[in-house]
Every structure is written in C-alpha cells, then in structure tokens.
Amino acid sequence: MDHEAVLAAYDRQLRRDAHTDSPGARVERAGAVVRQTGAEHDWNGVHWADIDATTADAVIAEQVRHYTALGREFEWKLHSHDRPADLADRLRAAGFVPEPPETVLVAEVADLPTEPVLPEGVRLLPVTDASGVQLMADAHEVAFGEDGSGLGERLAKRVLTQLTETPDTLVAVVAMAGDEPVSSARMEFCPGTDFAGLWGGGTAPQWRGKGIYRALIAHRARIAAERGYRYLQVDATDDSRPILERLGFVPLSVTTPYVYTP
Image (cartoon, rainbow, N blue to C red; front, side, top):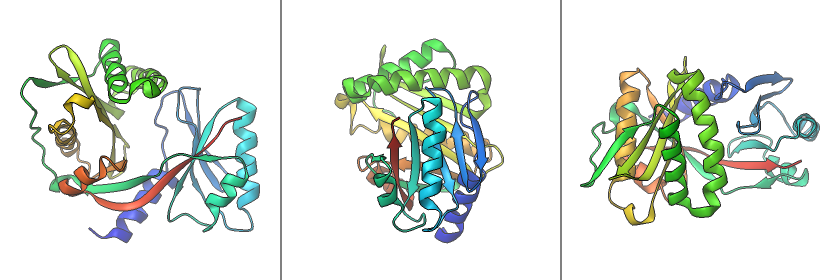
C-alpha cells in the first residue's frame, strides 16, 4: 500500500470533501473549516481545518462560538499529521479536553477475509428495524458496562434514523449467543469515495478472545466488496489494533478527539 497516496485520499475524500453521516445533520464549509452540525444525538465537530500558526487561534474560537450558540458539545477530530504542529496545545488552551487517541488503520478490501468464522452457538443478526437497534444498544451496554450506556442510547437513536431515512449508507449487525446480544458492529458507507468505515465491535467480557470481532470484520468486508469499496478504515483502540493488524490493516495516522463542552 502506498501510504502517502492513501493518506492523501483519506484526507481529501473523508475530511475535506466530507459528507454528513446522519440525515439530521449538515456538513458546512465555513471559511477554512469543514464541520458537521446536527442534533444533540448526532456527531457534531470539525473534520478538517486549513490553518496555520497565524490563523489557528481565531478559527478555534469561531468554532467554539458556533457550537456554543447552539448548545452543542462538539469534537475537533485532530490527526497526528495535522498542522500547525502545536494544534493540540492550542485546543487545550481553548478549553478542549482530549479523549484517548485511536490509530487510523486502513486495509484493502481485496486483501481481507470475507467469510466469518463464529464460535459455536453464536450467529450474526442483521439490524434492520427498531428491535434490532435495541439489541445493538443492549450489546453495547454488556460490552462496556454502565459507562457506555449513555453512548449506547445516543448511538441507537442515530442508527435508527439512518436505517429509516438513508438505509443505503449503513449496515449494522448484532452477534447473538442464543437470545443474548454479545457484540454489535456497523459499517458506514461514503458514496463516491473509496472508503467504508468500520465502527463498534465491542464484545461482552465472557465472549472475548473467541473470534467474534474477527468474524464481524469479515462479515462487513464481504459486503464492502460486493458494493465496490476499495478500502476499509477503522479508528482502532489499543485493544482492537493488534487483531486488525494481524488481518492486514496498516496504520495511517493517529486521531485524538478534542471535546469542547459549552
């Protein structure tokens, strides 16, 4: 894989030319910034900023004013190759709080396994309606505990909206052990780009290490191949990164969410 070429495509297609990931949100090109603004349960934040040391502070302040006026918490999605080099320090000085960094990993769909291998007693259930979305939220809660319950509820609202209004932009699935949801994952499509994004995959503690996460990757890789996407992209935690690298994903950048709460 040509790292520089793929990184340039990633920046251009997913950040500078970003499309909304929710029917209720809009992507705005406001001066030097590409940002998304939506409802409270939507992702609100900055995708891209064409700034330097002389303009960064003013642009940061303008985003704070914009989202604060709407009463929205928002995220500046900082990448390790973004400029200026001290942008992280400037965001902290403006009141942003960093969350744990994740590694942006990319793989060519053609190089990935596409046949899911599941442990005995586990099946994959496609999510197509409100009952499936509730199973996703339940799986998120068993995977992450009470700390993840609020996120699970917000995610459920967003997924249900996408399934209802723009079903061609999303595939979601729940891993079921009998009648119990033990993991869930989704894939979001960016029409007109080479990339499909993988999200989720957190698994209930007693089911970890049994291949469910890898099976969810293979399931989604098959669908991405059928739809003609070239790359799968993941913002990977330290837990999932080793699994993904063994499957053939390679690091592209490191992304850190800087969150501002009005």
